[in-house]
Every structure is written in structure tokens, then in C-alpha cells.
Length: 110
Image 1 (cartoon, helix red, strand yellow):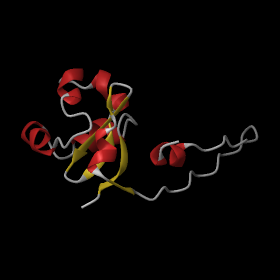
Image 2 (cartoon, one colour; image 1 turned 90 degrees about the vertical axis):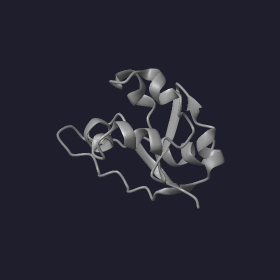
Image 3 (cartoon, one colour; image 1 turned 180 degrees about the vertical axis):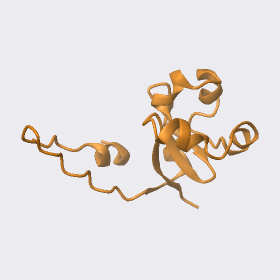
């Protein structure tokens, strides 16, 4: 498996009825190369770079108010300039992280 997929694969945890599931372990942010991000450029695996942060926006594609294609133009690429022109800095948190539609994958290696 590619490194990013291997880190996300976890065996299921059995939880007794009425019990709380254990907290998921914190994953350390990955340092990703531009080439690694560039491979995530399809509608089933779509990552973008914003301000040096790498985001998995795959689940957000179909609900993005600006349309599917506006994100796919930047799939696997740096979308910082276009994003900052059109969006409030809180857009990722408000419309993605809080809903689970966008996941933080790590930082771009310098």
C-alpha cells in the first residue's frame, strides 16, 4: 500500500454495547512531496495544496457549492492562489473539517 493508505488502515475495534469506543490515536501529520500529492488527482482520490497544507477533498467534490470541476482543476496541485481569491480563510474548517468532508493529510515538504 502507498504510505498514506497504510497509515489510514486500522483494524476495527470491538466495543461492548453501551461502552464508548476508544479515542482514535493521533496521526502525525505527514510531510508530503509535490509528486506524492500530484498522484491524488482523480474524482475518487483528490488532494489539493492550500498554503503548504495538503487536504483530501474527495468527499467534498460533489457538495462543493462552486461545483465539482472547480476543485478538479486543481486536483493534485497547489490551489492557494485561486482559493484565497474566492474563499474566506475559515471555509475549510466550516464547510469541510467540521462536516468530515475534508481531511488534513499533512504538510508539503519544502
